[in-house]
Image (cartoon, rainbow, N blue to C red):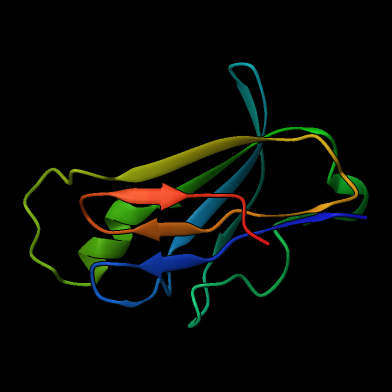
Amino acid sequence: MGKLTTHVLDTALGRPGAGMTIDVFAADGDARRLLGTVVTNADGRCDAPLVEGADFVIGQYELVFYAGDYFFTAGLGLPAPNFLDRVVVRFGVSDATADYHVPLLVSPWAYTTYRGS
């Protein structure tokens, strides 16, 4: 069975994105169903897969990263409102037996993501 994982890297401060809140949703068109909320550990990772086993099915998923809250807590003295607040990454899973790793590289001004390994 496959699984979904993530990893957050803070490219502004050059460190793992520790303590970032992430909401995990199953998505179907405009409808979303909250699967859970997690907080990244000291390495910017989650202690367990976000979704796995029988719960990990073919379909659309959405990760909502609370980047604005994370950078506010970091005390960078950014202008309000934040340029980036919540970073939403919606993606499709076409093979529920595969592992999907969706990292986020983020700064207060930009982000990137990709399907990792």
